[in-house]
Image (cartoon, rainbow, N blue to C red; front, top):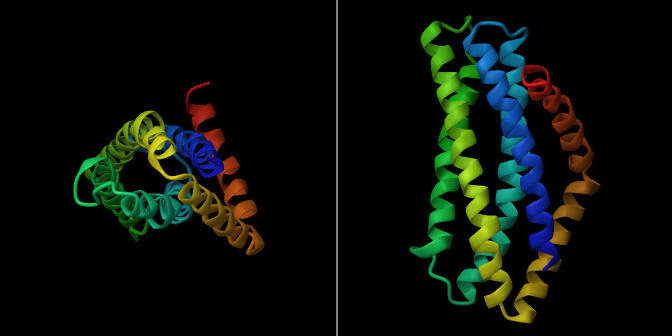
Amino acid sequence: MDAIETLMNEHRQIERAIDALVAFAAEARRGRSEGEKERLARFVEFIREFADRQHHGKEEDILFAAMVEAGFPRQGGPVAVMLHEHDLGRALVAELARLAGLGTAWTEEERTRLADAAIGYGNLLRAHIHKEDAILYPMAEQRLPEAVARRVDEACEAFDAERRARGEGQRLEALAAALAPAAVAAHP
């Protein structure tokens, strides 16, 4: 399934962003980061727009829906676990967004919350991505009927084409490239 390959490639982009976010959080925790709130806001934007709206959107609205249609339970099993973890990630990102939007300098406690939320999100997503790559996606490839798999591929391609037509793909790629140096600078 081409959709699965695309989703796995998106995982690699998300992992790079997570590495950069965790490195940024370590800098911010030590109080050594210039333009902290603006940088954090850019991470939140990337996570919400790419990891959540684009990537999780395709998973939830297309792949997982097809899996449920093909007999996977929505309220239990791997699909339910993935949906639950998406919600857990959204809660951690909401905390990051709240911290990015504060009008005053971060207190020591807020810096700790930032680091905890960033590290928590990173750990959650790394484990989540591993489960999808190693378990859920192979299950989908093995158990989805060919016609359903083709429909998933076509729907994911149409979703991506619509975002590309609006310039979202290029904008998010540029944002990801701007975020990546934070991880390299912190961990050469």
